[in-house]
Length: 194
Ligand code: GAR
Image 1 (cartoon, protein in one colour):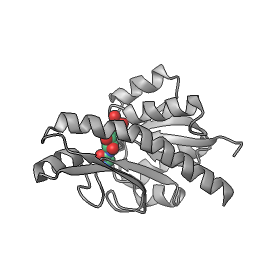
Image 2: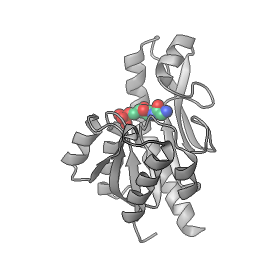
Image 3: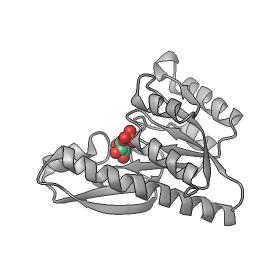
C-alpha cells in the first residue's frame, strides 16, 4: 500500500486516542494522514492536542444548525473538500445520522470502552463497574445507524481493577491506544487490496 489513507478523526473529549493515532501516523505504524480533527466541542482538550501536533481542527457545533440534516451536510462538505476517505471516531459522543452514514458507507470506524454488545452508550466504564463485572474491555467496530452497534472488527478484554473506575479506565486507555492503530492499519490494507 503506497498511498497514505486520508482520515478525519472525530472527537469530543480529551483526545488521547487522537494523540495515539497521530503518533502512529508519524511513526509509520499507520499508513494514514490525519487530514483534520472534527469536533462538536470547541473547548475540548483534543483541540489543544491537535494544535500541538499541527493538525487542522474544524469545530462544527450541532446547535448552530436548525436540523441534524443541515449539520451533517456542512460536515460532509468539509470532509469532501479535504478528500477524506475514512472517518475515525475517537471519543466522539454523538450518534452519526443517516446522511453522514450514506456519504461514507462502511467507512466510519468507532472505538468503545466495553466488550460490546455489553454497556453501549455513555460512561461504559462506569456502567461496567456499577454492574459488578470482573472483566470488561475494548471494541473497535464499523459504525451503523445504532448506538455502538455495527460489525465488530476487534475486541480485547480488560480486567476490572477492584471496582476502581479510574484505574480500570487507565488500563482500557492503554489497550485502546494499541488496538485502534493496529485494527485501522489492517482495515486500510484489506480495503486497498479489495
Ligand atoms: C475512549 O475511551 C473511547 O473508547 C470512548 O471515549 C473515550 C475517549 O477518550 N468512546 C465512547 O465511549 C464512544 N461511545 P479520549 O478522548 O482520551 O480519546
